[in-house]
Length: 76
Image (cartoon, rainbow, N blue to C red; front, side, top):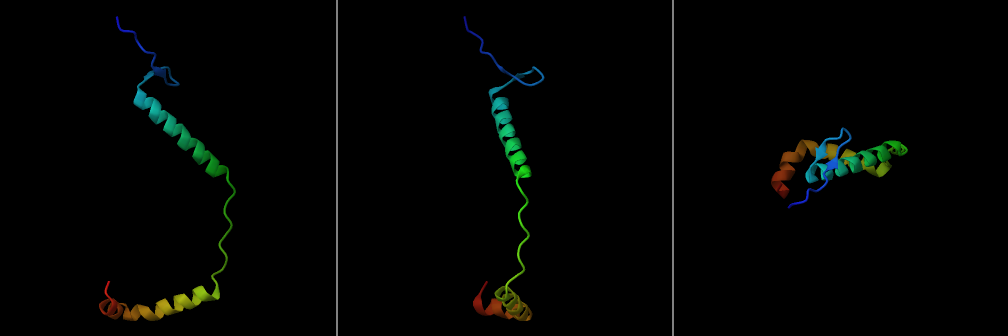
């Protein structure tokens, strides 16, 4: 005679399959991580761009009109 295993029960009392139990465990882990992230302090605002970054942006803007020529010359 085969013995019956005891299935896990959900909050509502319904039986849960092994897959359901695994999914529930993953869901609880995700919810815990979300709660942890929500309670973490907000990151500080980024600082103003440095002069080097501003110079790079100027170079990029000067290159934009010639972008097609640069692609043909250097490949892409």
